[in-house]
Length: 250
Image (cartoon, rainbow, N blue to C red; front, side, top):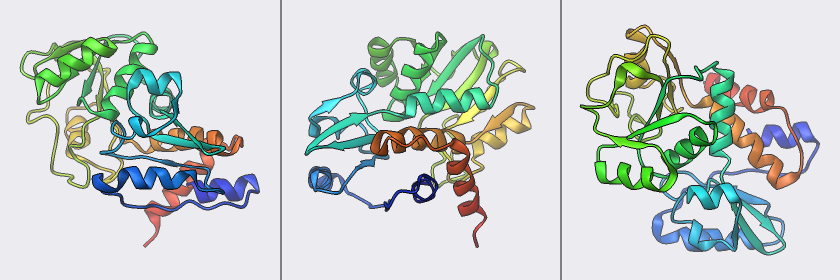
């Protein structure tokens, strides 16, 4: 995506992936202060633990307590969270219902961004997590309510967002052992984009519901990150086209 964005913007730049273990995170972040480095993205499980390694945070990143984007500015590192606005943009593209109850599955860094975003959009949010205490803590911090999967008012749910790692690289895994009966208007949005078709999405479609994977959110958050690094406003279609081209490649 970002390589395609550099080309579209006429900029000389590169973007590479690097696998970093927890023990190496501090050094990997410190390396971003080198001249010529614009910044980086963070994925699970580093979105929360990287916060303490940065000089400053945007208001959204500070409120969420997690970063997915680091911006290098004259030797200083600023943490941002483009997951939250990226999710809202993807939900708008998917024509998600605006009324009713929204459920966020998970309580980690991605869930924090989802709860923050949905609360900022004025939605009523319920947080469901296998560890109920973590859901309660997240609700107390960012708003919303925590619920057990067995007692959640599923029939009132018009938006279900999977912000857990369930399904990530494991298409037979699901954050819900039994798929609940949701409002017929409901959209099921899985932040997971690899694999493109998770068990949660298959269960939703079998129930007659609309379902989307996290590819749109990935593109929107990437567009915002690229703009933070370079100042270039590249259309989201450039990122989406690059993602689809990669998915279709043999």
